[in-house]
Image (cartoon, rainbow over all chains, first blue to last red):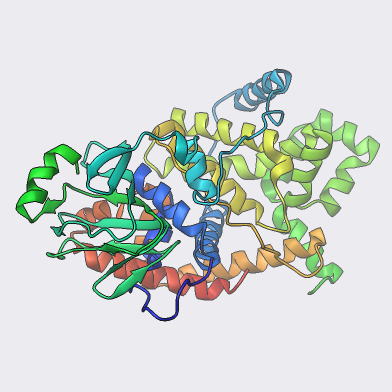
Length: 229
Length: 224
């Protein structure tokens, strides 16, 4: 998926940076962030290439590891396992029925295991809906956000990082535009964050928030406990 | 692409390490059997780890599987032991990895990825699934990839060996503090924040060093 528009400047962080790709490849990301990074990478060959390289490095480190000794009978137990797995015989016969559509890329489709239409969207403000996909014990959350074209999102500061990946539509923040496949990484030192959704179709985003968002306006503060950010 | 016989035989010697040879000599009964049929000779002279996987896929060849096991399983176990799991857990996971290799051998495409890369992915995913009990969505990073012009297995082995040597050299010349970060990432499953705590470094420093280290290693790998 290529750039959508030449007239508006692309957001500065529209591709996630290398340390996150390395962390993904080494298996060091949480459920929320790994889902986000895998989905983001599915739009951009350059990101997949980097993940590939990191995994190749992992392979070399694995192959260059010293050898360990196994407990007695390990290989025989393994052979027994192979025998029973083969007789179960249900491995490759399972046909993967992915609910992929043109909005949800494959990694996210696999995670959701249902189509966007089957999700239950919760009201979170005028023109805004959300589905919480995962909550971790440290306060990190993965969710889908759907906002009507033309909507202005209430001003909010951040506690912790907020990662936003655009799946459909686009939005602008501080004169930068984020379109399909783009990632915005808003860091915790941003005080006033006020994205505006482009006119037209709904904007659907996959979002990871690291900690509760501090909403600034009174009305937004009133909304906060209700919308569960 | 280099295809001279000398190099290929060198690869085979490299691939079939002393472990494998030890296995051949320590199983005198089987060794005798296969020598009689002349199969051990063909295995030693023409097989690379990659061709062994295709024998497992196509013929459910236990002999080929055993050779893969002898070479990779002790390394997979020691790689997993670095993640600070018990010996028992490391063996359970290694068994899971080897079972997956047996089951999914037909999914491995040597023209798209190294065998060691494939094994690394399987080991990583098993660890996340069984030890951390976490979902980890995969993205297909091998699409549109071709490792070489003509997909001859021997060529693949040559390229793989060259890449391996280059990566190991790149690791060796990496500054110690960068190398340490890479090792912590691959061996101990630490997040950026955990590394920052463990090394008492600002989070920003950990991330920027991570980027530099990764860039240096990638530069050695080139495009593939």
